[in-house]
Image (cartoon, rainbow, N blue to C red; front, side, top):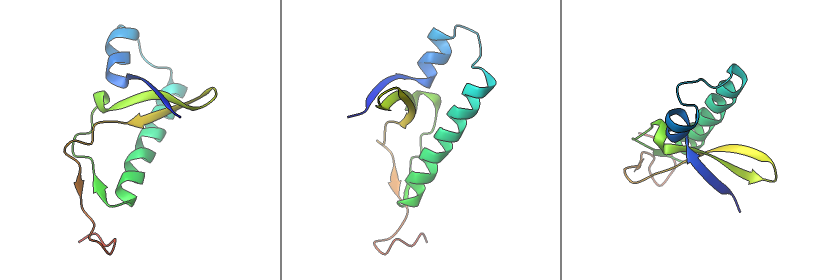
Length: 86
């Protein structure tokens, strides 16, 4: 079962305390974040509240850090029952 930690917003504000992610880490975060958005769109939904507070770093396999998308409270289905996006 995945373990989800702090949001990217909390890490940026409290953990990094003004410092920046390394370029390599920033690229990993961007790629995983965009993949999460793409995967959500692929199943016919829009998140509608994308921000750092709604993404968190977690572990989905032993020692494998992953970005998780959070808070689907205002997400909206954009595809019909046939899977077609109007």
